[in-house]
Length: 422
Image (tube, rainbow, N blue to C red; front, side, top):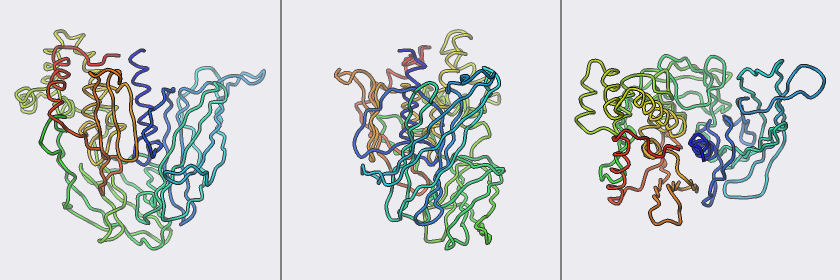
């Protein structure tokens, strides 16, 4: 199996099972081995209009869709059938369902990249949580994809009670840029305002899988706060402060709400020499890392580091492309209360690449590298953690067992090779 296809299959699993609002996933009450199917890019968000109706916003990129002529005209068409169904979390009975169609027209075979949006309403009563599952069919290609999103109805102050807009468009992710002006909407008449807590975070890279050192936790005390008041139409505006966390909660006694991570403009891509240095910590020794941190020319310093490992410029460019490509993917799928590359799953993904098999339950994820029937296969377990800032927080079960195998994995990189170069 080719390396791009292997990564494609794993990244699909993260679309299916990511726990952020805006990322598409299906929560399962039991461990599920993720089936290898082709990848498409989709985003979704849920907004509670009232106690019983939740609006789902869904969009997908047209890349990967098959465009073809349907008649004697010169135009090409893509057609997508989206079937949605709602089930209670952990249940099987369908509580609501429906079908919507997406179409797009191109005047030539050279199709412009665009987003195909839609929205629909689901009836979801309060005091329980649900799964909204989406079956996406490319009618022309006759391929089927599955996506979904958790619907949280156990709290009137969770992030799904708020709709986030940037420049008039729906903002699907939980990361924003400093200086952005955001519009927040709510249908909750009992929420007159949001307390905006600003945290200046300093989260470091994840510790190695054998480490006894605790990871850097989310902040407990805000550096500053202010109040954003909703107008009569249920709308307020927030200007994003400098880097860190912006946590928006309805009242002083409520911890749940909307959390935004303030990151560099290029995020989830690696956009600065400082980030190149910081995210390379996993394959650097202390002296190399400190030397790059202290350098006034960080770009030159990090380039020299990779060239020294690789042995020549061409090989160094390939290692840089592949290593920071993994950093970018980690940011896309593992961002929580910190950048995705700093998380436990980000660490393992960057060093080892996509696992052979991924399993997921409501409580944990298990990544397997190698043939599971082989005693030498490697398993990492990540337990889901509840916190006020993220629903995408997983902590690795660390063990001294990993010391030798992790050092060996890092040594592969340090010898100028790309681990799991598939």
